[in-house]
Image (tube, rainbow, N blue to C red; front, side):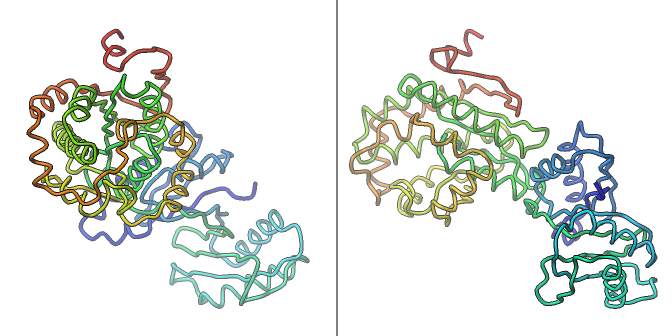
Length: 410
């Protein structure tokens, strides 16, 4: 293959002022971590990364770069000396390698090294003339070309490329601190977790499991989803906090009017998640709520549910429609897991007429029907924490009984 390096661009990270050094160190560390085990050489400069392929499969390198938040884009490049003869020679080698039929093209040049005697436009004209002289399949079209040869002259060398792959963008995971993701097992919450990581939030997942009210397969879905999300996390690993919600769940089903069951359940979940978050040094909670998508996600519902906590709630999907969420779910390879037909505690007993405009006074009154505070304390004290990585082989369904019994006996 003619390409010998991949050029990686940071984007907005270079504009972070006094925080620039920390941001770049984190994204460089993440990149190194994701490329671990590959025979590549990483060369860091102040505004980009160069990855020497050393005959490594570039598709595998790009696949791994696609899991690094904070990267704007990357291109397969051919490196050469910064003189016209060498630029034209290598441009012809590159184009001969990739052009197999007649196409229109143009040359775009960027002269970062101002010591070079020609202007950017002058370089483009010279290179285009040299290419046309040697190539039979090319015709110039500066307005709507099928192919663009880009020439970047920098102080160390010149880089030639014709492609640009879009990165995740955003900020490197962890630069914004940690957040506790309320992970249900459905389509929305894993996508919310991905978007939170994309903006620099390192996540720990909190799942409310309610076996035997809910099937063990529901908990396994969550484990499998965390494995997928871990591809985007530092060291390919995420903590999963399994909350034993069954006892509290039973009390809600027994003591709370049908229309308010989901609202009160969410209030309990927020209280518990806040305590789990604080115990694990998380600065916020993250969830997959989208305004108006279900009864518990109307603005009225969010208001009364939110009332139980002062911790910031990040809702990355607040304004997303379902089609957009599904598209992202498929992109991060979570969709097929999320749609497995196993209900979680929010869906196993759905009221026929859930309230869409709950009032705070009624919520407070209904919660006095049972001693939820002692149950919350007991629940938080019995949370089971797992380290899930991309190679985890944990299979709860093979063990055949309740979560708390599984981990009591293993």
